[in-house]
Length: 101
Image (cartoon, rainbow, N blue to C red; front, side, top):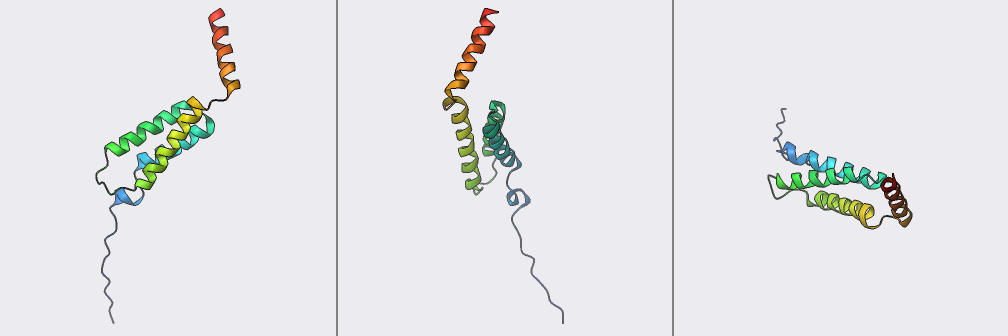
């Protein structure tokens, strides 16, 4: 007896694993927040903007976009707003030392 199976069409290749720019954005935002690297946060932000600008369908995984955006906002806040006071004092001392030299 011969069985025949219907081929089930899956999601297109680009929608299965997510956009690579979103994945890079997530990894860079996480690394930038963890290691306090402003460059990583900015690159992650531009990757996310580029990914949102080039979306082909509006049925993209919004949860991944929201997660990336949340991590990027947390990184920006931790680096620019919530910077500890002793780091700000050290930065001011370095600037004064550079101005004196």
